[in-house]
Length: 139
Length: 139
DNA sequence: CCGTATCCCTTACGATACTG
DNA sequence: CAGTATCGTAAGGGATACGG
Image (tube, rainbow over all chains, first blue to last red; front, top):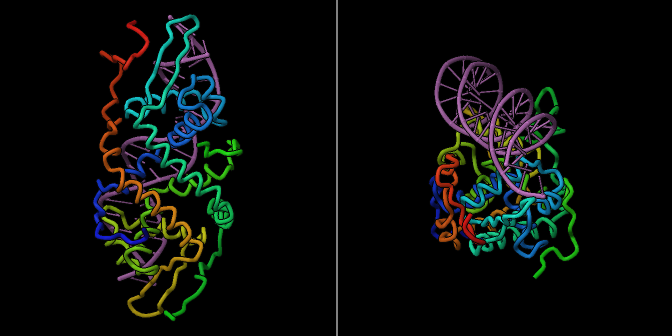
């Protein structure tokens, strides 16, 4: 697993890089996860909004649009008043939920590792001389 | 299979969100992966640069700095002329390589899913036919 | 060879206000 | 309730040139 076998394709379009693009949009993974895990694959706009603390209305809708365009979810409109819209995971979307859960689970099981990470945002201001920690040769 | 078990903590600082922050910097995961898989945990700057097609010098160094500050890698300077700098994975960094490989492996094994994704870049245009996959009934 | 400093552009994201 | 339209900011990231 840690071995790359024979795939050292590091071109722009390799699988690894393409997967990461999924995570490049802040809310995509959370929407996928929440849809599946908390709402069993389908939920209305407002429900999703409330399930995702911190998301803005704009980003919610925008991300949902992109996800629909990508084929991760479908949009179902109830022609009522007021309108009711439900978003549902597609089978394809479901596959990606697996990935997301993999990552999230790793995060939960390795919370200690996450805690050990120094926040580079606060450590912006380090030493003025910039003395590196060590200058040792290889052991 | 509720992966969520009991954790519906969707606050800003929950584990899932913190993991994702790791992936928020484009090159971090690739550097981690390449360091471990292709260079056995340690490599010099130039080697890393050549191992990562597409990365700019600026982003290489900048990302390495952030990773060092985070505690993912260490920097070892050979006081020679010309200078030789080696970056080495820390045990903490090693743990995150596990995560990265998990994701990359998923990508390789699910390349077909990645292929099925519609490129949302083309969905720039709006309106027009805009025929949503509508499921209920016709509008 | 290693690293820094600019310059500049693109984009993600958020706040807010407005329509149906 | 659902969605759109603007506006504004910050950050990511590349190109390039310079210095040790």
